[in-house]
Amino acid sequence: MILLRKPEEVQNLITELKSSHKSIGFVPTMGALHSGHISLVNQSTSENDFTLVSIFVNPTQFNNPEDLKKYPRTEKQDAALLETAGVDAVFLPSAESLYPNGEDSEHFDFNGLENQMEGKFRSGHFDGVATIVQKFFKLIQPDKAYFGEKDFQQLRIIQELVKQHNLSVEIVPVEIKRESDGLAMSSRNMRLSPEMRNESTEIYRILTAAKSFLKFNSIQKTKEFVKKEFAKTNLKLEYFEIADETSLLPISELKENQKIRGFIAAFAEDIRLIDNMSLN
Image 1: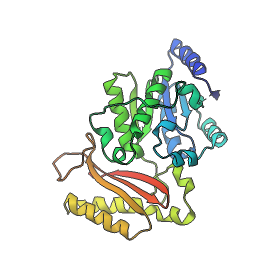
Image 2: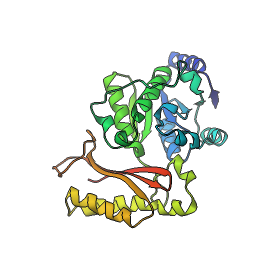
Image 3: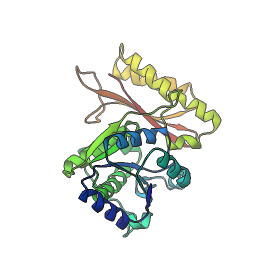
Image 4: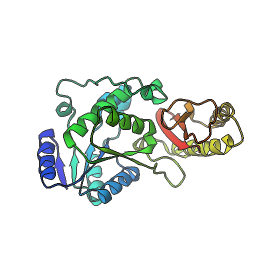
């Protein structure tokens, strides 16, 4: 497995791969890798000649400096895990190499996708995400890039970025990978205390219960049901939204053949967890 630290090293490698007509799969990560990331990697290695994974904790997508500071960094274990998974190259850039003129985001307009849910609670977050992903796409020129559905809003925004800028990369969504008790896999999970790790399974339980509840009740009643269920736990609900899968706009009533999802953000003590589920 090749270790790359400088953008120029990546450029040279990509030039070589393109000249030998090899297809490139790309998996962007912030490290602290788990089986969820490896499911993205496995899909890439099965569909491409060459798989490149980036590990970069992107400062411009954190609106909370404390969260950035505490974000787990496990470079050695990550590299070992990726090598075992059959990754061909890992890109471990510094912030200075990707943001030579200072850590600033571009501003994007994604037709309102960026203003819903996470956008309401994390100002500037999606500008940061889109800025770094666009930098990676320009540098790596992948044929396919893999994004997990756990960050469903992020996935939709990347799809919109590709569409708006007419980029020649196929975005491949990968299903949420869950622990055996239903908790969505996340790098943040390793920061949970044992008590809160147990409590966090309530997120999946409540989402699943909401899906069943919605079959016989209105959107409004389902939202009230979720709030009441969270009130019985030690988790603090930040939001629960039922939204259209394509526009991400909240819906107030069900329409035939409309694809909808339930989106949740909640705090386990000071650790913010998100999850979502198709409600169809």
